[in-house]
Length: 279
Image 1 (cartoon, rainbow, N blue to C red):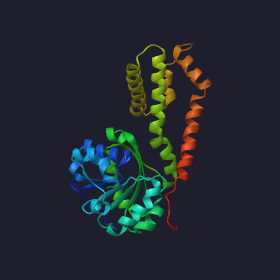
Image 2 (spheres, helix red, strand yellow):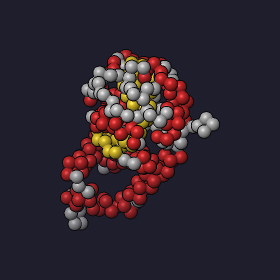
Image 3 (spheres, rainbow, N blue to C red):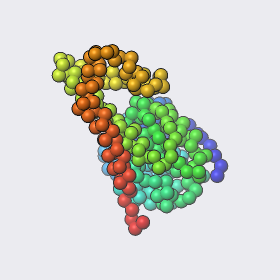
Image 4 (cartoon, rainbow, N blue to C red):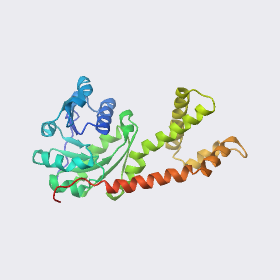
C-alpha cells in the first residue's frame, strides 16, 4: 500500500460527537489543525449538537455523508454502537483515501477489519478529555497494514498533547491509566480541595489552589523526566509536615486504593467488547 498524501484542508469526520468526540473536535480547532467548518460531526440525535452547529462545526446524523469528503474518520461511539456503525459506512470507505481511527473501548483491530475489510488503514487511539486543552495523553496501536498511516494520525494527536505507540494488547491498560485516569486524578484534586476547605479555605479558592498544585507536580515530572519520589524528597524534611501527611495518607490506603481502582478499570475495559450481530 502506498503512503497516503496529506492535505491540511481535508475535512476530518468524527462519528459520535459525545463527550470524547466533542473534546477531540474542540482540541483540533484549538490547535489550529482545522477550523470548525472543516470538521464533520455526527450524532444519532442531531439536536444535541445545536451548540456545536452554532459555533460553525459541520453537524448531522448521516455518517456516510460525513465521511464523503473526509480522509481521517474518527469513530468515537460507545462499544455497543460500533458494529452497527461500521456496517453502515463500510461500503463508503475507500482504502486509498480514508484512515479509520477508533477510540472505541474493546473494539480490536481484528474486529473492526471484519466489517471494513483488510486493506483500510485502521488505528486505535485512546486519548483522554485533556485533549480539548491540548493536554491529552494519547496511546496509539495499529497493525502492519496501517503503518503508512501512522505519521499522519500521530501528527494530529501529537498536536493535542502527548502520544505514545503501544502494543494493541495493552489498550485496556491504557484505557485505565490514561482515559479513566483523568477521573482518578480529578477525584484526587477534589479530595485535596475538600481538605483545603477543612483547614480554612473557601471551596472555590481550595479547588483552584489544589488544581494548580497538581498541575505543578505533573509539570515537574514531565520537565525533569524524574520519578515522583525524587521530587517528593525535595519537599520532605525529617519529622516535617509533608512526611506526616504522606504517612497518614498511606495508613488510610491512598496508594493501594488508586492502584486497585486502576486494576478494576482495566479489567472492566477488557469486558466492554462491542455488541456483535451474529459474530
